[in-house]
Image 1 (spheres, rainbow, N blue to C red):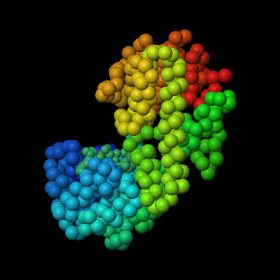
Image 2 (image 1 turned 45 degrees about the vertical axis):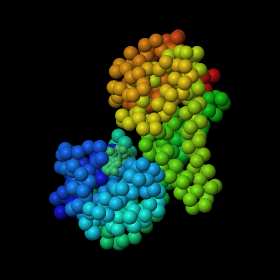
Image 3 (image 1 turned 180 degrees about the horizontal axis):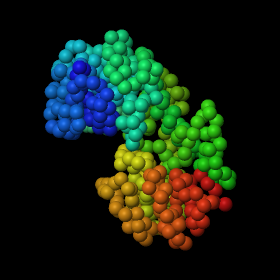
Image 4 (image 1 turned 30 degrees about the vertical axis):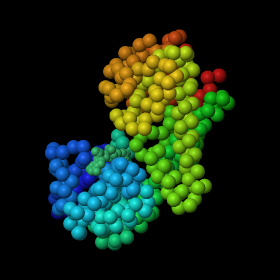
Length: 396
Ligand SMILES: NC(=O)c1ccc[n+]([C@@H]2O[C@H](COP(=O)([O-])OP(=O)(O)OC[C@H]3O[C@@H](n4cnc5c(N)ncnc54)[C@H](O)[C@@H]3O)[C@@H](O)[C@H]2O)c1
């Protein structure tokens, strides 16, 4: 009957809690989140205090943000968390790091908490969190204490086949997590880097992506041109890799991964300029899609918001529509697409929300309203829209 405490009950913590409540037979689950107290969510009891959650736990799953008041373990928040664990947890408690930290932080946490620490990085995606945790491609369990690693492995065996669980050292597990996200971001930047070349040369980035994706060594995933990568993880994890490379005395490695961030930044600025040009001086822009990707309502580090900031700075009135968001501080959000598009010179499709594919774009476009399609949602061949600007496709 494992007693499991989840610290940090956000996107990762909630999904993990839901899966363990269903799959780990007899588990006693409690969660603590600094921003929520005193409710039960399904079979997971929400503790009022960190002490209450921690004191009887066999396993302590840390699902808090990577940075808490400062960089990773150097931040005051993580140090405080470690002190609380050292004070309140039983000596036998196993601390499981789900949060993405700089490799090396696991050893520091072990020292600060005086508890055995196991690294078990999370690979789920937002929008499919529970499904990803339920059926993971792999679960990495990294640590130096064999018994602690075995204990975490047996917990996961309640729903994950042994062939998908990989034991390794803590450094390798954390490096694998950072590299996985860095390479996903790199793929997005790779295809986005081609959009400018296609627009100038007469190519079509979607045809390029289809052709490249047919190579089984490369595959089709993460090869769709877009306004850029965003969300709470990809850029942050790239930055963690950059910091680590610098700390370990390899500026050339740091520069390599830094260039992926820089390409993304310049791509977002290029998309902003293209929309601004299409709108004309002072023209209103209707932004369709605020979240960092379709199907979620998370705007953390969203390219849409960065584009909106750029458009407003360039003197464009902006109204937004996102099927999953009713309001957002600092942005005019309309609850209906027609209200956002009212009086707009350009409608800019900035997320690949499934509902956008269903819209009748021919009705929305006119001689005076251009459509800027940053996700290739509208098939130019199938729809003769007068003024369609498709990212990565020459208008010649
Ligand atoms: N979101 C993802 O898709 C994803 C995927 C894989 C890994 N991760 C990693 O998992 C970690 C958590 O990510 P998330 O998306 O769940 O973040 P989140 O912001 O959704 O949730 C974190 C929660 O921790 C709480 N919290 C903050 N400080 C706390 C403290 N001192 N004590 C208790 N609770 C505290 C916050 O209130 C919040 O609810 C991060 O390191 C992230 O990089 C996230």
